[in-house]
Length: 376
Image 1 (cartoon, rainbow, N blue to C red):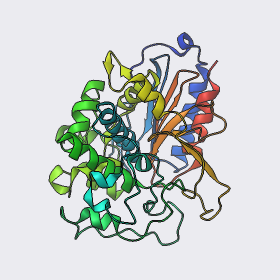
Image 2: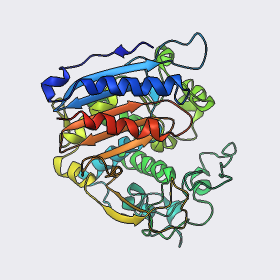
Image 3: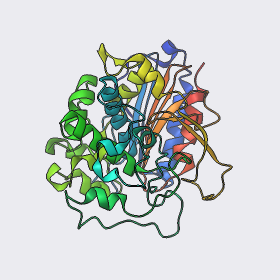
Image 4: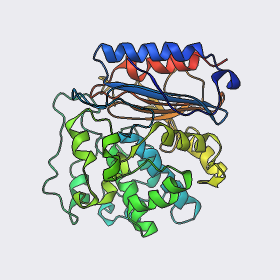
């Protein structure tokens, strides 16, 4: 199986990284692909702001004539989109246009009910609003995938708020992409721009993320790796297909390994990248410190009612998820195999794509242990 090499800035030795570790990582991913666990794999590693590994292998799709997965292949990054939405919210916070403890009801009137009035922007950013978790997040046997075909511009908010809160606001970490749809709507209403246009102008362009899009240009569609019908539908999607662009706030971006590294490096460098300041240093620090600590967490695990499982997170970012990584490492992941992990102590960034419909610890977690083992 060919391993395709993308552009790098330096050799591993130049940033005190063991180059033999890259061979171990390649062999690990190749074994997962050959075993049918994942369709392809790609990763980018950087230290001290310099990319020293940028590799890819596998196929763009399951079709026999599919091309190879390349270092510049585009993937839907699903929930990693949330940290782009977070960045937009933090920018508006710095401009004094919103504040963290601001009730959402002051911006979105449908929240002005006895049930929702206590929900603030902070609750949405930290998944502590109590809004219903993503379908399947609690490993329920029959996930409620609500039919949105009848949703319209005038009723999507009330439809999204329908039903009771899953937990009392502020009591539990409860992974809800819905909250980031509402954060995207807040960006749109406060900025006066469509959500996607705001992120494009104020985050993607300043970072030089030219391969990142909410709507793919037709010329780039043959560069996309797809693993599901949802991917295929998304590749040809247009803005007109959306009830509102704010629906993309929790998971609508396409991107590449290199583009995602730019966002991660920006956060590692205190809000700047390549001379462009995206957010202030103190704002970046606030986003990455424990804003909630040891909260009961019932998502992504079968212990739905076991309060012994605890979670810590910043503003939009997850913290200290894996005990074998350096304390202070922050990250976000995306469904169907995407991850962005940043270690401030080691000044190390890991970006990974491992396309598969299913979650596998061997592809999502094991590569992290391998990658970090090479740090000298």
